[in-house]
Image (cartoon, rainbow, N blue to C red):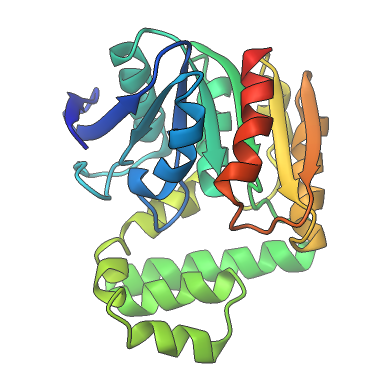
Length: 259
């Protein structure tokens, strides 16, 4: 990241941009940084000015306590102001929930696209999310960063053998360094359910996308978002999972953002 701004509460935020044209800000999900969405920025920058940034608590950005979701919305407000005063937003996974909150909060956002924002679609899933929140909060309070990462990986559906293999990998130290930000994403997701009242207040066009190879509940959640906003559209991408391929997603986003 080659540029820095300061958010309203004094937190430094790192970002970079590429391309020319109307601005799109890419919002990453849990356990990720701006670098994670950079492969998507490359094809989009052929037609747009694309901005990627490190959300607070990760990468080269700071993390001023105490955390509140409103601070992350203020981060986006400061970033949008710095890059021209208006932008479209794309958010992946829990980053989609943040993008939707920003649009509902009245930021100068012209369009929002989200990919597989993982809202719970059943009572059982909501209970699982509540247990995750409780255990994550305890693990982070006790400094058990590795356990916090394990909790998140289990929530995503990874098996124990894969998780224990990850613990032995060279990537684990980096994952543990970002463990505290898991609480940020958990807060952004609220109670885990679809926030229909909040979504109903969004006045700009919203494109909600899912991969047709992802679990059915992911597609249901994406459809629920589109149905809850006044100007929502739902779309699936053939053969895609939660780890969507940038070259498949980019043309769909470009078509939406050109409109």
